[in-house]
Image 1 (tube, rainbow, N blue to C red):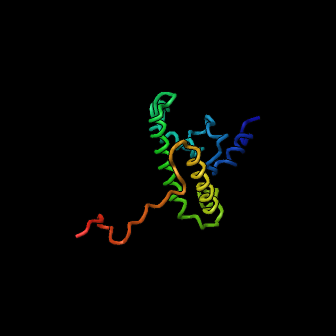
Image 2: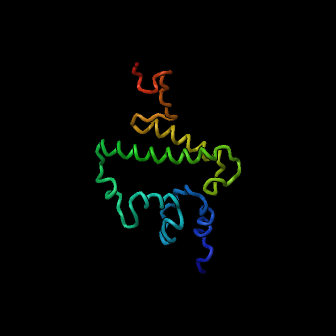
Image 3: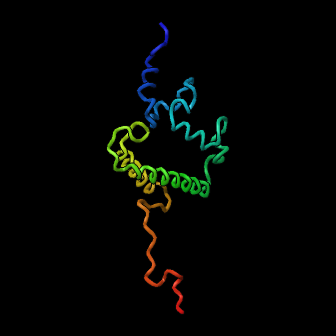
Length: 147
């Protein structure tokens, strides 16, 4: 009769270690974002803490083109930071090495695919992989001025 070990409890247990359970991202009464879904925790942190609204952070909808570009740049920088941290584990085949769910190789491959997709669909001038800065010809390191 009671709800001990209910179906939802079993589902939560299944997805507790998974950081991408979008269909369970907003379950109420489970202790809040820090207790269930890291995706929710990221949103709360981005907004500036509990009780903050999305409009307080990014403004009213629809967004202006300038605000959209600013947000794309902010998201892109965060994605690059995550990609860089995952690159340190990209050769790790150990299961559950990243976020307790993915091998380093799998997490890096998925993040790299996200980078390509985001760059292609962001309606910005993003490129992935980013082009390395052009090297200066020999003798041009100090600005290229002669004697």
